[in-house]
Amino acid sequence: MTDQVNLYLRLPEIVSISTTVLDTKSLLGNLAFATSENLVRAAGGGEPTDIGFIQTESGHTRPFNQSAKFEGKVWIICNGSFDLAAGDRVSIHIDTNHRGRRRRLHTAIHLAIRAAINHFGFLDVHTAEISDDATSADITAEASRQVRQSDIFAVDRAMRAYVIDARPVRAVKAKSVELAAQEYGDLFRISDRHSLTGKIRLVCIDGVDANPCSGLHHQTTNIGAYELFPIMDTQSSNSFRVRIKLTSVWTYWY
Ligand SMILES: [Zn+2]
Image 1 (cartoon, protein in one colour):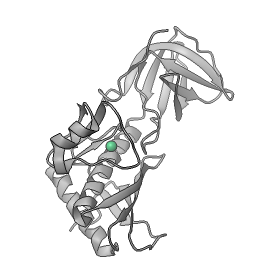
Image 2 (cartoon, protein in one colour; image 1 turned 90 degrees about the horizontal axis):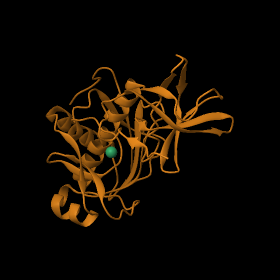
Image 3 (cartoon, protein in one colour; image 1 turned 180 degrees about the vertical axis):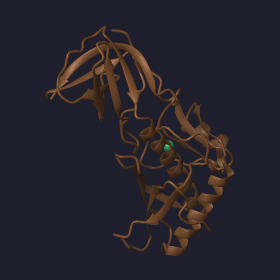
Image 4 (cartoon, rainbow, N blue to C red; image 1 turned 60 degrees about the vertical axis):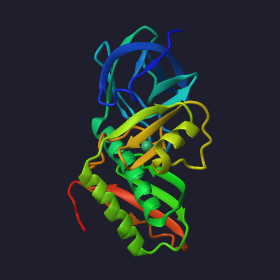
């Protein structure tokens, strides 16, 4: 069977494509199918799946809000069963608003973590997750000392300075974690959660940060309006827990 060509990492701006169905499967009564050219990024790395709709050659449209990665391919999952077979032409349309918000939030996560590392001198990141509807992202981490409200303001202020700067955000390949650490020095960070071997994809923010990541990112640090606030359910001393929420306008500035 022909291999699937993934376009979402190299060409995240492409949000519609007409392509060929490679294979179909029934998954718990729903139809899963893989296409020869794939635009859909499945969930992973703290990022929810792309959502959107498909259109068959006969003009029928179906939404999708699930995908899965198995057998070396990304499979789009549509609710219910319908007539679709290998060799059929189908057009895939990604929800551009959902993807755009995810990209903004993913870049925002990098900026917030970098700002926090610079502020505290150390940060042990536990989780960084974008919500399924891509309206907010939560970061949970442990700092080296007690975290106060004033620390969160300081991190937010530093993050906003990056936003105004509109620095380029680029994905580059590195031959290994060790070589990336040598090349980027203090800008390089890697979470202990992951043990990466071999070639890695690095997301580099000019002069700010370099971090292995397989997500889709906003192309500059100018991610637009957001709010950053502590998640109030925990007041444990050293825990740094914040939510980044995208907003349509700036609601405050320092
Ligand atoms: Zn990322």
